[in-house]
Length: 333
Image (cartoon, rainbow, N blue to C red):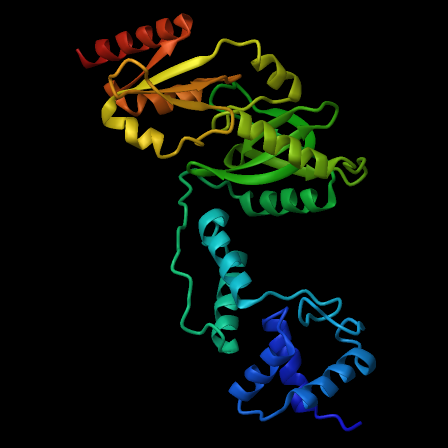
């Protein structure tokens, strides 16, 4: 059986760019590249890629189309999703590695010719306002490596509330961007508790290569994601025990006047544990019901609406807000 390496190379490239493509799709793609072929010819090339070169799964029929064996590739649509995810969620497009990956993906799209004119337009680059220490890049790389290797680290952490820095040991679980800066979620080495550590507050960090690998890393990721979703911002329960204790706390009810009712109602799933209900008194107002282990960041959100939002219950929280408003009025006097 004769082998046309030029045509085989073109087929491999097309499948790499468009995993799941069918036989007829391959013919159209090759014809678009001015390589005149028939389905019969391509079928023979497919047998060579399967049996002799072992680049395709050796199956009689591939109902889901052709994809390269043991080679991971992305379709043009999947690349768009990756770019959108980088733009929207990655938030680190100023970092050298992310910028290089973005440029490579865009060049890949344009070279493939399948989506040359469709360059993703979302370029949301979050700006971090927190100062980077001189060792920031090294600390970040070490934390990311520890996440991949599931190894514990010892680190120095200081906040404005602490008179002096403290040393902690734990397993880095994941990194995320919140408001205006990056956080690393770290699990205590000797307890199932999670802490959001702001990256700029970590001054020293060392990997404990002799430490035990975190065998529950994947479970920890799912647990901390659940705990974050059960909180508000970085004020989330630090453990499942704290989350269970939240059930015994009084329900918080915030009320929004009719000028903000539409805004609140258009996102009734704003929080997985909250309930948004229209008020039943004919005012056109809306109530927001939720239970939180730590309501501080939630209160900041409520205050951002000014007089258009207020706490209805519990009374203890209403009294706390009254005292805070009195202090604010005193400042403005």
